[in-house]
Each structure stands twice: as structure tokens, then as C-alpha cells.
Length: 131
Image (cartoon, rainbow, N blue to C red; front, side, top):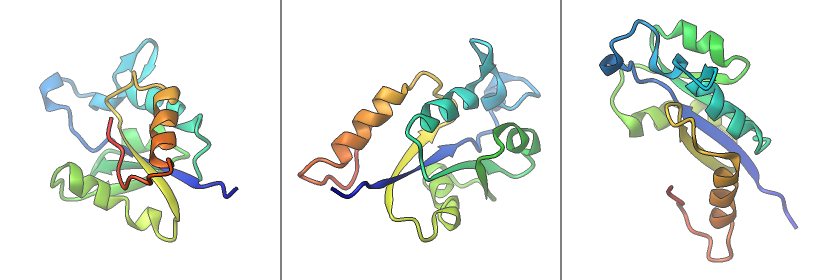
């Protein structure tokens, strides 16, 4: 049986302007740690070959916080689809399944990501699985 590889792309380029805070939205703590750290911890349970965090320009505090994950920069910010496209270079040569996660959804569990991968890898081979 062939083991398919997994990559995780975490979208974290939003400025969070509605939060009225100088702290980037994904760095706001939930239960004692930054939202993005919850997402990265859940993703790490999948043992991905690559983890890429997509940031906007001038998001150095977030880049520092997510290290050692790879960082891709979306510049200019042109929406969610464009943010995923910003990770394309970091995924160059990758052959496997890609989970796209949002850095501001800290309550998605590793079990949910595993179920998505199981469904993606099912015999009927769906091209996309959406939560």
C-alpha cells in the first residue's frame, strides 16, 4: 500500500481590522495560546511533509511566531483563492494531498483533519473534500 503524503497550508494573511487591535488576529490567545498555534498543533498531528503559512506583507511578528513553518507571502492581498495560490511555490514538486486551513479557526481538531484525509483518499477518489 502506498502512503500518500500530506501538506498543510495555513491561511493567516488577514489583518483582523475588525478586532480593533494592534496584535494580528491570528496571534490573539485562545485558551492560553495564539489561534494560529492551535491550528499548527492540530496540523502537526498529521505529520505533514510540508507546513506552509501564508501571510500578508509586513507580518513579521506572525512569521516569527509560526517558525519553523515555511512562510509564503501574499502580496497584494487578493482574497482567499489568491492566498492559496501564494503557497504554490512552496508546494513545488510536492505530490500528495493538501489541507487548506484557516489560522483563525482554532477549534478544528486533528481528528477532523484526519477524517477529511480519509474521505479524500477513499476509493471514489474525490478531487476536493470540504469541511
